Length: 234
Ligand code: UDP
Image (cartoon, rainbow, N blue to C red; front, side):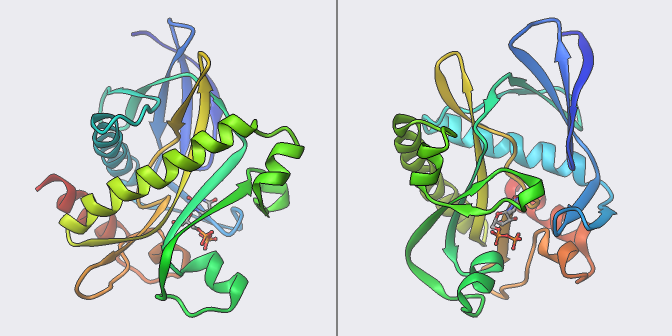
């Protein structure tokens, strides 16, 4: 597969064309941003770790019947993916209150929710990814009724699969963000699943092992990402 022109550069990834029209290369960078990119930095080795963690989780989900954009890992920082038209929704799944939900509702971090909460955020940096509901999504034509039903069902399934998997690795899956995309008439799970897009707490100590260490200047950021990878691969 020939690597072609770069067609996109985001905060944590670059995307390149290949010689096949519906296949792309996704490259993971070490750059990190938070708070709408007002905080910027580098997490050494993050790209390599997130590429591998995403690969492991996409393969796990595929093995359970969840279609994803992942095709295969190419090297340390790059994976081959199916080209999708990203649906402009950030789907957040929450098992425990943290971050945005804690702030929005004035609830202390750590409250275990009676059942998982699904949130839609309109994917729009200039508006700071505002919280919307399915009626906004439909009325604004961001996704169809059918697509939203599918995304909702899939997101709860993905949460069940990932929660059980991480539990086994002594990690609590607090919350995470998913993105979906359209590919040849189907809706696939896209983007990445990594400590950049999930919150993980150690099951015993509740130590944070994710991007909150960067957001909150807690130190040992690289070490936390390494630790998640280590637990997933042993
Ligand atoms: N998240 C993400 N990208 C975003 C916003 C959030 O991957 O642009 C992830 C985040 O890492 C966390 C979950 O989505 O695992 C919920 O984030 P929240 O809404 O609490 O926002 P935050 O506190 O990160 O601003």
